[in-house]
Length: 369
Ligand SMILES: *Cc1c(COP(=O)(O)O)cnc(C)c1O
Image 1 (cartoon, rainbow, N blue to C red):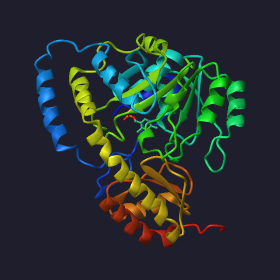
Image 2 (tube, helix red, strand yellow):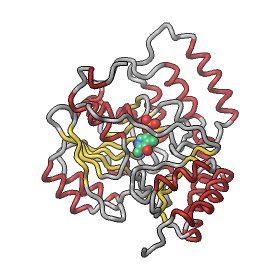
Image 3 (cartoon, helix red, strand yellow):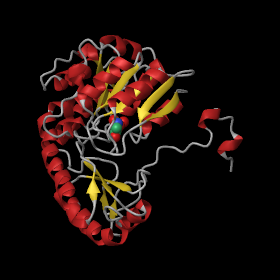
């Protein structure tokens, strides 16, 4: 068998590993932050009809600019006291593709991207894939971003692209808008706020969408993979100045969003209220997990997302395996002492808390030890 080393691979990709959330069989899969609730029956019926309708025209290329879909997404984003126009919205196959297009347009050879780790593991991977150098930004020990220190790092490094994930994955906490403003002022590059989990934020946590007016280098990315419960659809999108959308058209593949994807996403958006009805239930399970941890001698990081980073464990990998042995798959994000669990249904939370209650005594590090 040929090994990668025998291929003329780009040097910056040598020795790298692909994105790898393990897709191992388990009774309770709480490792990739999916929404566990089934799609509403009315939506499924409408999807069947809409896809059948779109299929009639599959001999034709789709709308290259996805105008109707972008208009629906703009209407969705404009629900919360912000006005987003269709020309400000761009969509692609998952927010991962949106982020890739941003790096293709604004990063690339000789340019640098900065992100504050620990954060979303795909940001450095997509940077490498687009030939963009990656630099780890600093966080405090409690995982918050020190705005002044971060701005100083930005001013010194002058990255072409700065990533802020809010709420942050894997830690869960939203970033204050003041921090985002400070970073915007510090950079002459593009500031990307990855808001994949925004719909799960605790009350009083405003979106960076409210900062868009007058900030043409600010980009806010969103996805239908998490709160909308449609990870299999592959639909991500962003809001920004219309000029950013124009820039992305220089690098996107023509007809990148299939007619079936566009039709399915528009149908799902017509059922927004029913789809987002599960968000409160998921948040309640998240808060239940957070509340149960101290009783087991464990702690967590404040969460605005549909997951909780919990610890401390003497050996996170061993605790991960012990939970898996009990049928519960959580995520070892590579942070010493910590694991991440997705908040799902009440039954899933029951199973997780029961398993954790058995595992915690052998694996936890008592506070102060
Ligand atoms: C899950 C996730 C995404 C979603 O990616 P899609 O390609 O839209 O499925 C984006 N950003 C972060 C931080 C995530 O955790």
